[in-house]
Image 1 (cartoon, rainbow, N blue to C red):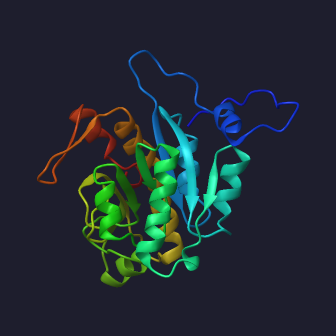
Image 2: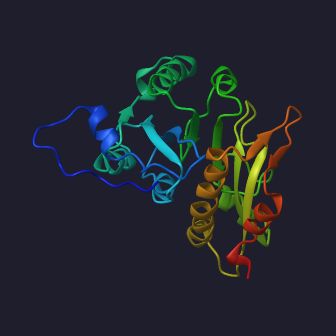
Length: 244
């Protein structure tokens, strides 16, 4: 999101002061700012792509299950409210998810955005945020669910790989798809080179999907169909420059 920091205060301010100091400037008439919580587990490269995208949103929380996650430091440096909820300190998945939900609810988030969040969430947690919980997965779902997706793609011998932004449902990596982008698998690719090519597309389509969500252009039907207002423009966005 596009942030314009105020001049540094003479005295140390509260967390709320710092959050307001980095709030996105008021959008155009008719656009309502959405409050989003971003969940990370590592360096937060997808989080950074979202923060740089000038979305009509306010990041009201950046939360990690790993207190050592590098993304927490970069978010804090931007003046964003950060919190670590160590999953290792909880005896069960449900206990961790309850603590995570309490933090999200306290932040007032309207959308919950998984950006490299490496925890499988319980069915109860997912149902609590159904239709408001989104994820980006480094494969063209429904192919190659779970971990090591680039290794899976290379082992399968596919010629096209990519990434998917989807709503989260209790079934792992199976929710309704909002947008996908494809990249070629080139001769001589290894996991690292393929992952780097996919990551470029992740950083392109995740901000786009979040913009649609923040602008209330995405409709999730009861049967799992996803409808995007301005379908022609959305279809044009699906074309990946990497395939040219």
